[in-house]
Image (tube, rainbow, N blue to C red; front, side, top):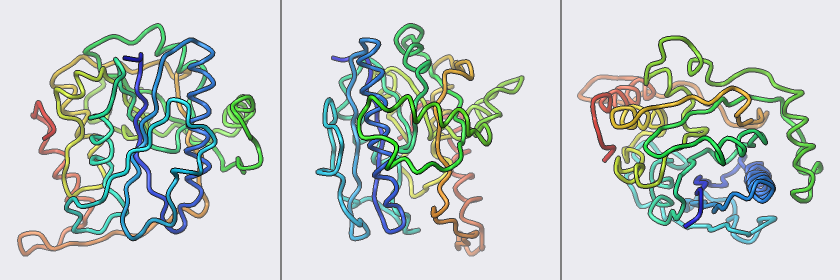
Length: 276
């Protein structure tokens, strides 16, 4: 057993080639600071696969130390044709997790050094943790680093180029699970046995808001903590990321915006104690 399992899921589709740089930065950042603070760790990456993959990451990583890439054929229900549905990838990794704790994240996160000090000294069992995520200006990181020794340069650039706090509601007064759920897919942490107890992420046909549903279920079972803002992650803006307009679907003979339907599914977990 190690102290912590970092879990994420990824798929490199057309126009998402930039994610390869992000996942390499993700790996090198974790490796650098876990070694610095003597934190035992593993990185579990579920690569989701169907005909849309531009390429696979298996032989394109800059480091494979404590890294396991788990391939998942996308045979799950996906009627709205999302590139992937995060929940299935996160839950696939959870099956293999050997960490006392699980930190579930998106694949484009960079962690502050204070994050590692915190997870070494502060986290406790049966407690659900959320962290600040700051958006930063897009950086050409492919030419900024070649190994983990240059991660400090990236972090310094992130700090200098912050545009906004992505999950400001996590730091408002009268915190509720709905506020806690803002951008929860970026980073959340719970001990592994507790994640397994609540059965991970809800496996539905939805892409958005299922991270918030995890927060509902977790908060029905455990106490929750929001770490101080300096214990944070960074996510870089991406100029060529695809942004589509509202999508509408037919449900029970009524036309409804897909995002509203996904939020309705999310809210069905408000009083649930397990995700699946």
